[in-house]
Image (cartoon, rainbow, N blue to C red; front, side):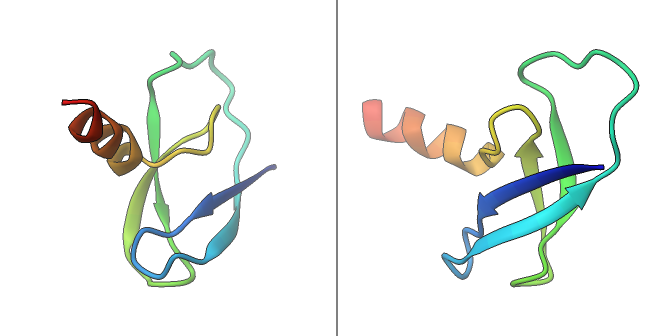
Length: 64
């Protein structure tokens, strides 16, 4: 199992989740749906970077 830590967008808390190991090579921009134990919502997390999909969109908005 893989350990993943990310920041919940709703609560701002650092959250640790365990994910099953992937058996296939994944592209760098693939995201996995994770149920957040802090807010009980589903977040899309990049397994390689630990960043949420919403973080990617927020950064683009700041650059514009």
